[in-house]
Image (tube, rainbow, N blue to C red):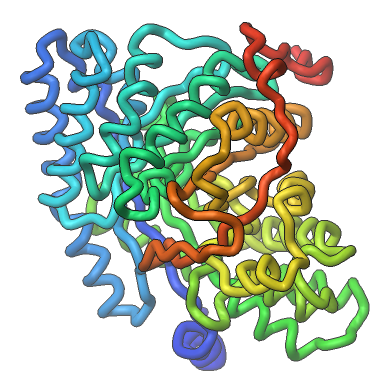
Length: 454
């Protein structure tokens, strides 16, 4: 039974502490759309998406009205397009036509984003994989709602260094293609190690090939709720700190579970997972960095920040798994720069550097996220940053990602405005020393010894 105090408490979290359901993401399999004819393939893709997702946005709005729970985004993820288009697409230009189809389908259904313009190349690239990857700059510059991701490695397979080298070029080209909009195309492009099949968050969402025909995944958020809870136990010991975060994460996840259950029943589509990540927004009071400061860290990036993040991530997961039987996706704490006012403040104050962010990614849920860097960064340097982050994921058996934005025409200290949930970001300095000779080696880095657990 839900008592009146819990109802009041939830309303308080929504009205004053920025609690929301960040996204309802409908995953759709496009495997049955595969066709040798490109025109027929595009027709099948559009028809399936618009049929399956016809009531997604309307259903989300109904749940918002009936329960008073903000649902910020309604999104779609699809089977990695490199797989779906392998037979019909003989060139990067062929894949771009599918990007247009996805964008058109997203507009028709009214969703915020559609993810799955993706390739999975952790051990090597097929010709279709390579063509899709090479098409990304044109695809993202010519569409509004399409998001792209590439999985470049895993703990079981190692790192595909040829693909990592190629992605350095692709990210720089994407920045050039969208330089008139502060290189925003790169904000819709992320690379992974150990990418999960059921992530509801963009830009990395895709519908894994092990998933059913359609599934509802929900992502919840609530950094402001956690910070408010910690204010009430200021100065208490670590046991009290951990228990407070864990109990708060439980309450946040229960809200997501309610929304997921309702959406699943109303759409007659199976419920997949709840991703209980603490994902910040540019709004005041909705910051991961503010949680660190409430714990006693003067600024995010100061000594102790990595330990504080490890504690936060672990307690969020522990609280969440008690609230839902199906927790998945990424789940934990995101540390994007552009989407978090506290992180931006820490960068501007000199407390937070790219190197410290990389250290923090060893214990967070994702990796280097929404990092703006000077537009004249070398392609090999981008690949080196990616390789470092992928290695952290590979060795630590966790998901890591890089969403880096070389902003053409901008230098260190400039501010880039992306708008909406993407927020704004200061351009951060990058290590000036080169890694070209390392990145230009061909082949792959083998899986670590602890991957052999058969």
